[in-house]
Length: 495
Ligand SMILES: Cc1cc2nc3c(=O)[nH]c(=O)nc-3n(C[C@H](O)[C@H](O)[C@H](O)COP(=O)(O)OP(=O)(O)OC[C@H]3O[C@@H](n4cnc5c(N)ncnc54)[C@H](O)[C@@H]3O)c2cc1C
Image (cartoon, rainbow, N blue to C red; front, top):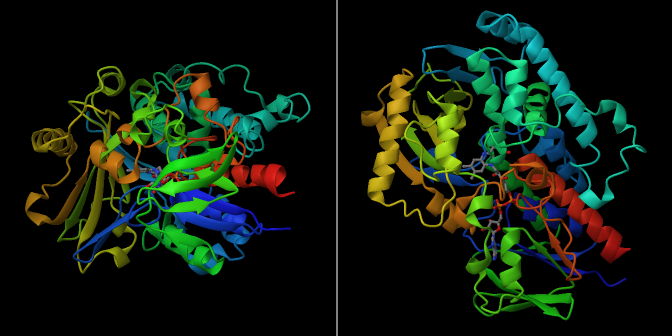
């Protein structure tokens, strides 16, 4: 049988993963990445010997990464060194409360008891709810496209259905399980892992803290970008054609079947199959169905977008032993913060700050005594927001005010290298509407569970992979989307 010619639009994690899976099914694969490096949002910035991950800083469900290496005929252990973090993070609150989120159950239950003894039972019930949601979703939502889910009554998942709390609002469910304001804020943070507000998301997202607590938070020595480097190496070995600085402007189709792509420099590539790894909302424009041909005109509309972020990468000349690998400095009014992000669509006056200091666990990424700091605050994904110098300076003041209030040391005179990623820069670098990191937000059932499918319903041979499509954003789910998409291609196109 003649091998299928596949063009993957985008060399992000999803694009590389689907390319590897399809190459190992005998397809002739070309990956076109518009940027200067592979990896998409999972990327790296190196300056003066400081090495920073610019995107993901924590992975969960490591076996999903391992599965991909196996599909590519390799072993993850031979390519990357992965370690589980304990404590997973330190939490710092405006009232001066501070504690570690330990993955040791006895340690963590001790901390919970000190905060409010009634919450020990609440924590165990909350984890049970997460476990039920995980049992329901692990072989359905996470592994198959929505149309292929087994009938709930057939699959034995019925007994896991969390009838009481699984269907309501996320924040209400957190409040029903925890009395301590600190634990409420801690568990309300999890919907931000998919760029969403706890006050507008469904309770089903309680599966996220369960997954993190049960399966751990993991780091990769040398930085998470080591995953991308390994995948690119495996792609080369598998004979995948890897093109950088190659933006696809048009998906060509004859009637209702794809026939190739056209790049920005007018190069044409024939294809039997096209897989979109860029934002799914751009495809309509790329098919020239809106008549104007401009790919940027059809992007995800503002009100549907997940959050973006303001990220500061700072190389510090001295060691900071007081810092943990992950620290969260919470804002004083979480509800207000999300209202500013989603209703007013502005950078919060008092933002919650996440600091990732991987050099605390890995000295290979810093020169000498230094530290690498990745400092992130949530920001709205807006088109209109210019993020000029004065706006950046104002946001930076808000970030450092929160950090100072939480007792973070003065680092101003110790900064050796720095780079700032605004939503505007994120949007431009990865061609993402408004810099929305996770495609659409997960507010409400439909948005959380019915994301764009992995197979186009009208154009034959057109498929989707990555965070803007089913099952959603975040590195493990993006890898699962690559598995789902390659299985659909095998079912509909190869056999
Ligand atoms: C600051 C930040 C922090 C994050 N933290 C975490 C974390 O801790 N844990 C976690 O699991 N996830 C995290 N994520 C999310 C995670 O990075 C993403 O969900 C995942 O990497 C997305 O992969 P993807 O393949 O779907 O998309 P992308 O990485 O966006 O890749 C898509 C690629 O397609 C390219 N492209 C787009 N359009 C075209 C075109 N027309 N032609 C050619 N190429 C095109 C883009 O340049 C891009 O390289 C974070 C993301 C960011 C930005």
